[in-house]
Length: 106
Image 1 (cartoon, helix red, strand yellow):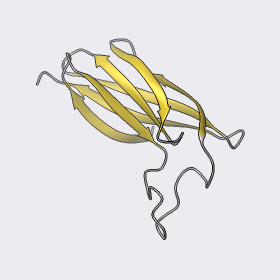
Image 2 (image 1 turned 90 degrees about the vertical axis):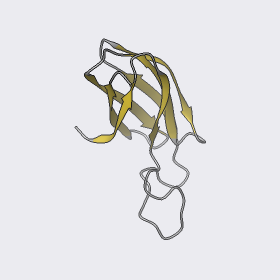
Image 3 (image 1 turned 135 degrees about the vertical axis):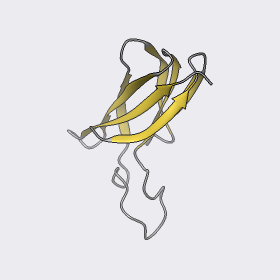
């Protein structure tokens, strides 16, 4: 499993998390290559979570290069893997990104 980030949230919090497929350069000239090729976009996405924490909604954002998800709930002292699965405009390119949401009483 490749984990991009670890986040801490309170069980009562409803927060947004971003899965970004342009994490390296954000379009900066001369930087390392981005995941998406020039002109390539995210065409479909699904964000999933295990039982106990809720994906309230998600959407493709940032000119179709990221996916933003709203997450709520969770049991205190429990870690959850939230997975974002995408398809891109370059068929059959697909990818997953995973974040860990650590639910802690804050």
